[in-house]
Amino acid sequence: MLDGEVTLYADGDTVLAHPGDVVVLPRDVPHGFKNRSGQNAEMLAIVNPSGFDRMIAEVGRPAVPGLPTPPLDDAEKERLRQIAPKYGVEVRPDIDFH
Image: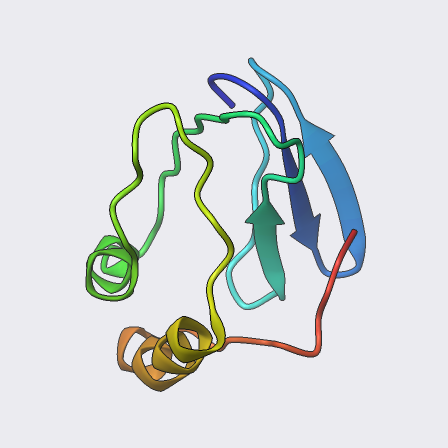
């Protein structure tokens, strides 16, 4: 974690990551992250195997420096569900962590 704080989820457990923290989100285990702070956050993600970056480029939208990124709307969520399998990603809408 470089700046701010992000809530990370892995297989039923959550942790709040702060600057300097390193968190591993294992492959083949349901996992994800959300910025719930209302403040900007910056993290470095190392993903193996490669390809996740291409999914983000295809599905995501550019961030506006200094402004929070709004949540995905329903159309964006559906687009993500359609595109994710192409990259070996399973979207799990049944998992909502706090």
